[in-house]
Length: 178
Ligand code: HEC
Image (tube, rainbow, N blue to C red; front, side):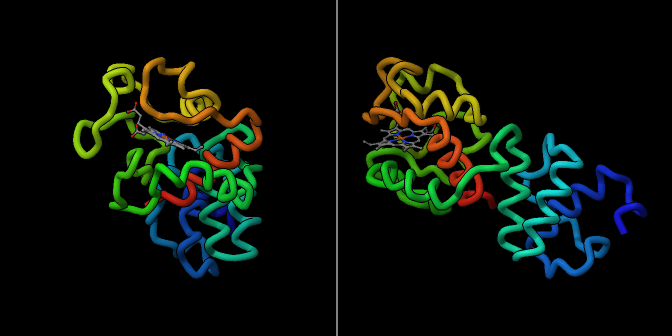
C-alpha cells in the first residue's frame, strides 16, 4: 500500500491519520497536527506511527507527535511525563483556554514564542530573553529556570534527571496538541 505513495506524503498521511478510523491510510484526509508535521523523518514517523496505530488511534497521534519532536523523544514515557507534570500543576494549567494561575497556561507551549504579550504578567527578564520554546529551550528551562533566565519569576528548583525532562516535554507536546 505504501509503495503507491510518494514516501514523504505517505509518512505525513500516516502521521495524520491517528484521529481517523485507521483502516485506510490512503483515504485519510490530511487533518494533520502542526506539531507532527515539520521535520518528521519519513521512515521514523511512518514506522512509529504505524506501530502505534496498530494499538489504538490515540496512541497513533501520540506516537507521531513524539516522533516529530526528534531525537530521543520517540521514547518518551508519557506516564512518567504525567507524573512529573504534577510538580508543575501547582502553578500551571494545561487545558486549552485554561486559567493563568501562579504561572501562565501552558496549552500549545511546544514551539511557541515565550512570554506572549497578552494574558499573563511575565517578568521583564523572560519577555526580553526573546525565546521560542523548542525542545532544547524547554529542556534547559525545566532543568534550571533560574540559570537559564536569571531574575525570572518561576520559582522552581528544576528537574535534574534528563529522562524526566524528556518525558514531561513529550507529555506537554501530546497533551496540548490541537
Ligand atoms: C511555583 C510555581 C511554578 C512551578 C512549580 C512551575 N512553574 Fe513554570 N512558570 C511559573 C511562572 C511564575 C512563570 C512565568 C515566569 C516569568 O514570567 O518570569 C512560568 C513560566 C513557565 C514557562 C514559560 C511560559 C511562557 O508562556 O513563555 C514554561 C514553559 C514553564 N513555566 C514550564 C513549567 C514546567 C514544565 C514546570 C514543571 C516541571 C513548571 N513550569 C513549574 C511558575 C511555576
